[in-house]
Each structure stands twice: as structure tokens, then as C-alpha cells.
Length: 287
Image (cartoon, rainbow, N blue to C red; front, side, top):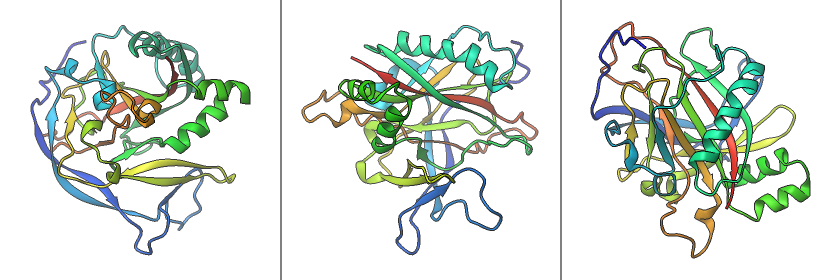
């Protein structure tokens, strides 16, 4: 891949959008699916805070799923998926690659269930754009819902819950050039307090209610990004880890929940290529 520009490097101070509660004190929620005109997508707000975001470039191997709830992988082989434009083709070609990556990377993993993916593009016509609000995709409640929804039977769901279970997103850019616009920021789980995490109902038209989490700002949170990220790199984002709930469990497991968000880097060149990315979400079981 010929690089036509030199990506910016180093730590940066940028604004991140954190949770602001509903003014009426009601349960926070997002509406999913087709939202009628004039109906707000959510009932809570956001507040921008200037945050120091550390560049993880050059220290990629320092971070682990158990301590930080994210992991950076480099030098991944090219995908057999040709275009990342067709969902059926992605499931056929890219999903098996993601499954192998997780089984080979997550210690003790014995079973992986990939349950969906999202492609994000900054183009105005794109239905899914980078999310510039600090969040976690899943909570314990929604992880259990996912297990029961995607297991082959109630008996299998019960068996899967008897072992360690996690939700891990596999995130990668699709741009041919290193990412400049809307890079991804992520906070070490070891610096995220329970009080910072706010469950948010995710309400679907058919009555199904899932759950995500919004994040309150706290100055002790340690934020990172990977400068100039390229298509042969992956970030594993752990949304939930049951091991962190075990009383007396390993002290190395520090919460299993990674807050993350897209952000606007003030150094981004005018006319820089818009970010394109795909995240595949997986239930990971074992040992």
C-alpha cells in the first residue's frame, strides 16, 4: 500500500462527548430502527470535555484484554472479502477470518458466535456514521440477552453461561490510506469506575429492549488511540467479561468493559479522506 501522506503521531488533546442525564430524571434510552419524524432519538444529552488522548503507537503490546479491555493486533493478513459492501459476502468471507482470529488470540477461547456487524462511513449518504459519543456497546444484561438469543437452545444457553463469557468487537479500518479523520479513542477499563457507567435502554420498534451504556466523565480515565491505523491492524474492544463479576476472581481482570468513541483530531488535514471501518461483534466463550 503506497502511503501518499505522513499520518500525524503523538498524544493529542481533543473534545470527547460524555453522558449528560435526562433533565426529568427518567430512565435514559435510545430509539432504534425507523424513528418517526420529529421524535428525538434519545432522551439524554452529552457534554464535551477536553481530554488528553495518548498515542498507543509504538507500545501496542502493552495493552491486554484482562487489564484494559482492549488489545491491539498488527500485521494481520489480507481479507478474502473483496469490497466490504455486501452483507452476505461479509458474513461468508470475513466472519470466518474473525472467528479464527478470536480463537487464536483470546486465551482459553473455545467457542465464538458472531452475531452482527456494522460498517461506518463518514460520507453524507452513509446510513451508519462514526459515533462521536462515549459509550459501551453492551452491558451484563444485554450480554445475557445475546446468549439466549443466539444460542441454539435454552440448554446450550445455560451451558454457555456456566463458563466464562464475553462480548468482543473486532474493529478495523477499511481505508486504503492510514486513518486521519474520526479516529477511534478507547479508555483502559482499569481506569473506569463503576459509577462512570450508565445503563441505557436500547428500544426497538417490535418491543425488544436491549441495553448499552453511556459514560460519565472522570479525570482519572486514561484514554488512548492508535495513530495512523491501517487495514492490517485490528482493535479488540471487550464490551463485557463475566470473569470481572466473579467474587474473588483474578485481580488481573479489571472490569472487562471498554468505553470508546470516535473523535475529531484537531490536527486533521483539510480534505482528509473520511474514515471507513467495520466492527464485528462476537460472543466468546471459555475456559
